[in-house]
Amino acid sequence: MLKITNIEVLKENFYILKAIMQDEREVLPGNFFMLKAGTDVNPLLNRPFSVMDVKGNNIYFLIKEIGKGTKLLKKKNKDEEIFALGPLGNSFMNFINGNKKIFLIGGGTGIAPLFFLSKTLRNMGRNYTLIYGAKSKSQLVIKPHIEMENLNVIYFTEDGSFGEKGLVTDFVRNIKENSIIISCGPKMMMKNIEGLISSNIKHYVSLESVMACGFGVCLGCVIPTKLEGYEKYQRVCKDGPIFDAKIINWEKF
Image (spheres, rainbow, N blue to C red):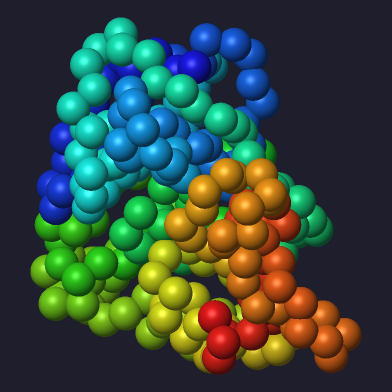
């Protein structure tokens, strides 16, 4: 169970759900939780959310209000308890080794796990840059939180209202081979990044998916991958949510 401490309302229908973990759990960047939005069977299924931050027993989720489940979560009151299954999935830390420069590229709710990872890399003394893209300045919804943490960030907006004008993929063309890219956000963004970079650049993606169970039983979140010339379906919840972008069959995904 998690106990709600605050709902911070942001712009563009986003909000940050802040809660206390009432038992000790090791939460790593890239992990996610399945949260129960209602108190009955409507909605029946829990909802998956990436962890945006952890401070001691305090945990933070960046959520966009798009349906009944996210609307119910937004209405939760302080000290109200919600069912939470997690942490689930693998972690970015499984894929980061050596001393390569690390570029974190995200947008939308995909920025949430990259915020957590940026803080972790900074605290480790690693060489990283966060690339945060949106259509306009108003959609850079966690910009104040990024600046509060003094993270190394480059902003992109499509309309040029803040930061660099253009798409985050415009930046990707300049990334050198001795680098690691980690991306999370719209599927087309991640696919385009993979199509633009050299085959020698490591690229890992954190995938978002609708899922029913969160631990690999229902097979509702499978994606097509290519391993040693064979097609194999893997589960976002159990095998991911982080994958090597080069094994994903982007044409069928």
